[in-house]
Picture 1 (tube, rainbow, N blue to C red):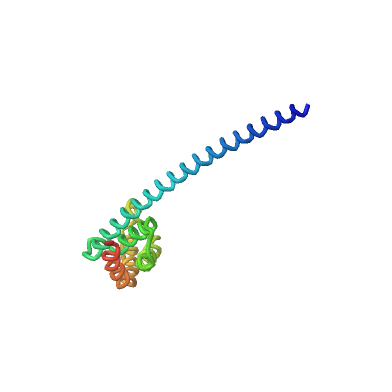
Picture 2: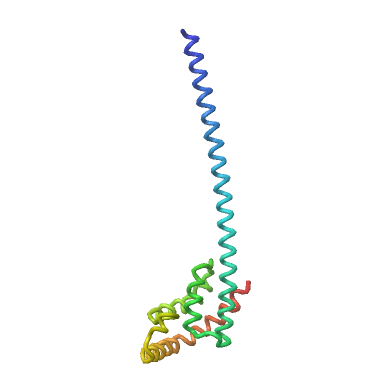
Length: 152
């Protein structure tokens, strides 16, 4: 009878050890998959960051050359800034674009603009130009900063 308990105990230890090995292998595989996913995510973030930086540079240069309105540039840069892993200097430069985008967010664009009456379009254009005038110096400084700051 003692021998039976010894055999049962040994079998139980072997089964539990086998299960522990199985769980260890599963954990190792899961960790490996997680590292692969983390690496892929970091690569995607780096690619997105790089593309967004390049786009911000192009918009900032176009703004400096007066190829875009301040509001249009602000909307685009504010959106792209969310895709960038920014330094503190970049965050500071982005703030004014985000503020202008927020200040003019109520003005319709594209199809909605086309649906407005001419008098309403003129009123909103005058309002937008007034808001842009209030931000002009800061936007120009921000565009200059971003066109050089993001070169690295």
